[in-house]
Image: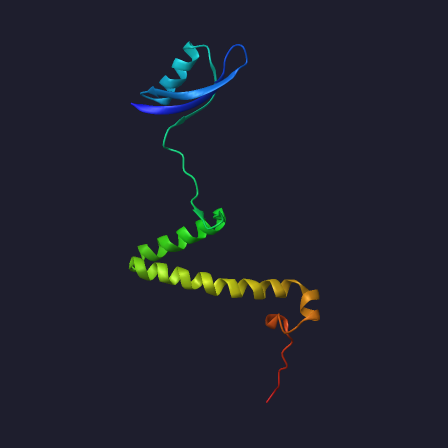
Length: 129
């Protein structure tokens, strides 16, 4: 038997909730309706998934998706686990410098004011031989 966390309203309009033990979600909803409770949500306890926290902030869902996709491809290719993690860690540190040069290329005012900071936007002289 599974445990279900539920929320609902009574006939008087009072919002209630709790944990209910039942064989299935449908049986849990039927039991709550017999008690004259209008069900708003029913979730199986322990089935929720939260994105893990790293450091002071939350992990960006997009970055987590990219990481897991790249990790999956490397594992499927037959690379050892430790080597995959080392490659991903190295690409993370290299990616930060690429990202900053990309931003400089997009902001032309900044590039004109301080061309030293934005090496990617400097004009390069070409000499013909």
